[in-house]
Image (cartoon, rainbow, N blue to C red):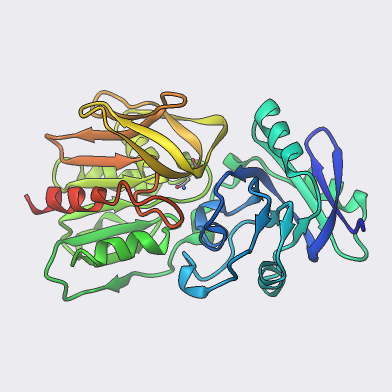
Length: 348
Ligand SMILES: NC(=O)CC[C@H](N)C(=O)O
């Protein structure tokens, strides 16, 4: 039964079945992860995107809040070949449209051939093709969501494990996944989570041992204030970053970022460490990349598939950043040691 429509750039409309009603628009992206749908759907980095799962069955082990990465669903809509009732009901309760019964291979190939693209969705008994096209035509480019940080960041400082025996971390919340905070707290760090537009004085008030820029949605160039913190603190306080955090650090220190053709999203992206030659499997979710690291940062890790920078470091200035997600959730735990490394750097 057709009661949902997915409109892609070029005004191509794909018929589908509504699993959660409503209309939505966003950049359509795909993840190849075969587990971790709860973690991905609650990952703030998917804000303003439409998430397509290439794995054909989504929801086969239920929906449990303990696996959520934040307190709400972030993609504007979800697309799968087959979605279980658990997931569909969860998305409906969150007012996030969802569709299935379409050939998701078709969407994936289209994105791989044509690059990242806009999308409009209309789902439910009254949905029409025109509704999906209207959504598509109103869809903005990711980079034009200039204040996307405000949609995903905390409103005021939140502190975790204040009396922890370990290092004091100032985490700039550009849309942080909960597992990043947990990974730091598990290692005894006291974590102060700051709004994405925190000032130098806000951060100075906690005398951090480490300034950590989180993951987050959209174009890293739209996180200027986080970049200013990096410029202010570089050399004085060790710096760490994950995903958008790596991009913000690179931009602030003379590097450049660019939009990728269709990005990396999945749980089996191979990354090689250039110093040890060791390859680890990583979780990824990004559409931008560091094009030029600038002269302060060395590329220490690269993606085996396309050579893009996966790790940037400066031993003298105490900087370690990763393009992938060492905190996993979902995905392999091969690179959890990143948290030990950045906290050891903060201790020195
Ligand atoms: N997970 C992230 O932090 C994503 C970073 C950025 N929004 C990108 O798409 O590249």
